[in-house]
Length: 261
Ligand code: G3P
Ligand code: CA
Image 1 (cartoon, helix red, strand yellow):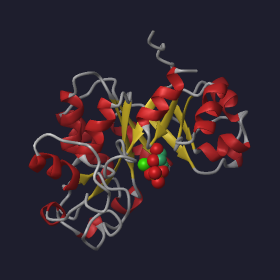
Image 2 (tube, rainbow, N blue to C red; image 1 turned 180 degrees about the vertical axis):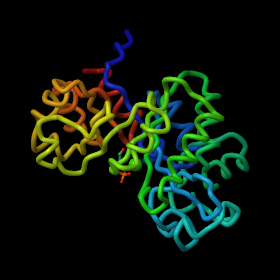
Image 3 (spheres, rainbow, N blue to C red; image 1 turned 30 degrees about the horizontal axis):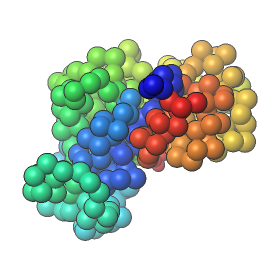
């Protein structure tokens, strides 16, 4: 007998990033195969104005190159190896294409096409990183890309920056946004969010310390989407509190745990 699907949505953090290099096409394909309901990615702007999926300000940790993403052009990033730092995982087509899918920098445009072509509907949660530096260019470019590659009802924009989310609301009032929180500021403790945001994005640490937060956010009419939920005890906590979605590096394991509850 197959277990019923638990209603909590599972979003793959940088793809199935425990198994494949984070933000690689291989990691996102694996997340879809693993049953993720959604995919998470961080976006940064290159020196020549392309949005690429890279978490850190610099490429040093996740590639064989050095320097800030914002100082490099897409063609320079495309020469770097973004995959070999991570041990090989079982992702394959032909060895060559599998290798490229693990090692090539991923543009947001390519990821949007992957989601559009997926064999089942998956959502995409796009996080704008340090957008204040670019005075609106990240959001402008993002909204333009979403116009060219529409995924109606399947995209949300996330940020720790209320200013970035405000820009998204101005440009695309219907697009759901997630206000990410590392700590619960006094003004957000009651479950309220900066205007316009429909979804609260607390760190799992917030819920460990203050489990009542979920009920307060729900009473304020917000959904709760928690990050980064990898440990079974945290998955259990989220299920008990009735969160709406969890973001995890282990979509397969977390999906299975939830579906067996
Ligand atoms: O999903 C939100 C989470 O990804 C925020 O933290 O540092 O992993 O981008 P970070
Ligand atoms: Ca992120």
